Image (cartoon, rainbow, N blue to C red; front, top):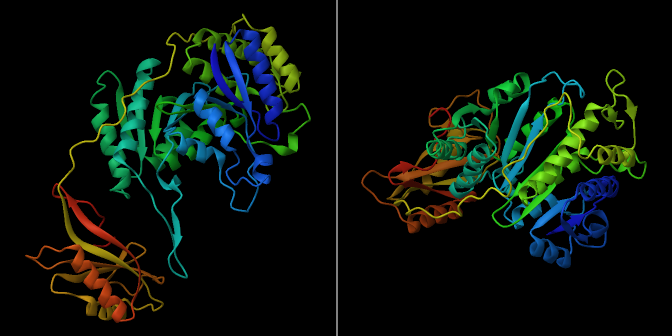
Length: 478
């Protein structure tokens, strides 16, 4: 018997959770359930996180969380409970299997069987944003070596556990050479430890095009957070329907399982919603907690039901469907098929019970970190780079001199082009004079001169090398 936490959520959530739990009980799942309230009514009661302290304690104690979709109220500073849960509990891996059910669910890709493994905690989803000038806002893209190592290792361990043959990495490291470059580098390092599993890397734009056109050439795909968020929904949709897909959110100590669709409040209380997405999440949960025999029994019953053409309104197609049913009736049909296996779709056998375990991160020896200069970001409403360049040279010191100005990443001084459009946000690079070793005091001297000159310095980024390797980008055009 495994203790789990259940949240029925909002909108269609209670209906599809009730259907899912009925199916699990009928299949013999050994679950001891603690139910909590999360979502809209908790938000509207004044909790901006959508979850109470007591609910947190239940989730942390039980470690396994099965969650129906919730509604986050618009405005008012409400935080996404999904994002909060993933980050707070260290759920670093989001896993979404996307498999076609041809010919019973319409798809252009009948042989598709792809698993998206998405990094879940960092990247642009760190949510660190600032408005820096009247015209420019920024969002920080944070990629860490530990984050890369955890998610890539998980992808290869997943492939190993479930007999997958290939792991593919998608990044945009031809442009983001530091952040996506680190993800790709770590992928190559870890891939070398799994010689029995094929590996490859694609630039994300052409990789996404290939995924949409020929998904059958992929097996497991591992990606940073944003790309994984977008492409996991694309992958689910091209199998036939986002409404059929579930996902797992995996950490070292905790795990959350859910449907990937939203709460659909317009369909609430009408006995119309398809519980398949949440049921698929629950099947992933059963595998994770070591009840793989029950997971296979439920999955095969669900496949048999889909094969029989017993469908809810969202996937009903008179060409292949035999009966349009509601939420409760669909659950009844799956329950009636427990013990049966599909005749045309491939039946499943989940032999490898239990969670995928990866080592907790151990820090490497620290690299030698050497300061080379500083980027000073300036808010200036002018448009002529030569004018601001002349002003900024007054900030030169004996150790640090202005060497470059960029605007939105494009070098505009010295020797910029008149055609380059400039906003009011300028990156001004001060590098060490040859033979000089700058210190933080030299940076402070530059900023002091900026203040004295009436220059609005809004942000700085120190420029370092790590074991002699440059740890900062060059300007486009440099």
